[in-house]
Image (tube, rainbow over all chains, first blue to last red; front, top):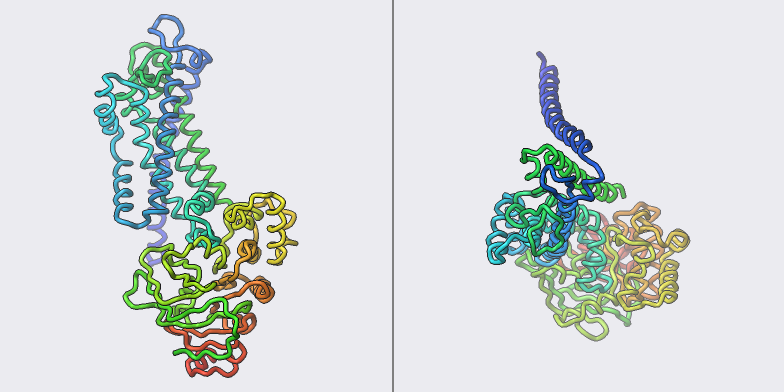
Length: 280
Length: 261
């Protein structure tokens, strides 16, 4: 075999192996999505959005309580997590820059991002649920916000650093004070990236179950009082899917389907923002 | 000491024993430099890479203050005061001493908002006043005809040469006393370069200009005075024609004849 033939042979082997690996991964993904869509769509009906949970065999039960609870918990988590994450990212990129403090915060955020979410749930259980004496929507939102902050902080930091420093200098050279440079010029330059980070952060926490088990717990009925235990799609899905009743299992599929579509939607919107930015 | 010949009476800036040290450096990057900058003229700064010409230029609007640890010494007199004073109001100073950068720096907003940016910083909110001033600045920067029909469009859609003229419009809209050009055409094609050079020659009637350039022909074409810098020092400053035809210093002669650089 000549050197050239050998090179081509190795090339073909590597290409084949990597293609097969990619296909296996993709195959599982499509399998999961296929089962989900098949069972989910079958379980979907209008009653799911109208009815609350009901004991098995007693009338029609739905997921209204879980949908509303999920939205409320994620909304509160977003209301806390997004401003904190964006402002902290701004501090790192625009003010602290390469200082020791900034590097430490970056490292800690990276660690927090990979921390098991159940640990964060246990932490919130200890500092909010225990003193309050009962589970609450607020505790669930707090746990999700804690998971969300490092994600948004790091993307904001990265995206702001991608804005060329000459753009900042040009704004300063016109006599702009620092806060105006940041808000009017740097934020605009990084708008699409920051928005994507926020959407991906929301998508990430919307699919969390473990931290909610300890915090917002669950409720089979409609509740909009954040200071009380509250249903969420993820915990409801866990409870229904593991129950022995067939109509509850169907509701579990429906919850899984709705949740997946919600997160898929957020991800697609996030990618579209990035694509639009690159397209310019 | 540098040879300084035939600089007119009226000066807009006076640099006295100026020293500058970057945070990362132990020794001064600019050493005991003194030079006058003539009012309503174009002064070019030439010299090999790393000679400190851009560093000097960026000291005139205190751009180095954006990064920690840089140290100024000596004085730069402007309007009778030393602008290196730590108490200097940098926001007011930079509104009077504008800057054009090497690469065009159009902000991610509309063409109109780009030019109005400095005006709005100065508190001008009146719509018709803004319209008038933006139009005037764009006309003065010789770009009005190209953009008048699309003022609301994103400035990043313009070509490099157009963006650079937009940046000049943005800088002159606030009517500065001095404009600092930091190699303004090094990222542009020859035709855009010619446009910027013509603009520089026209603008000097209203504003004093300091331009840093790598291109000696450009210095010869646009400037009234030229300073030659080498290793952080000013070697020679004089009328451009004189400096290029009959340089007083041997080092200047060697540089402009291409013996080094």
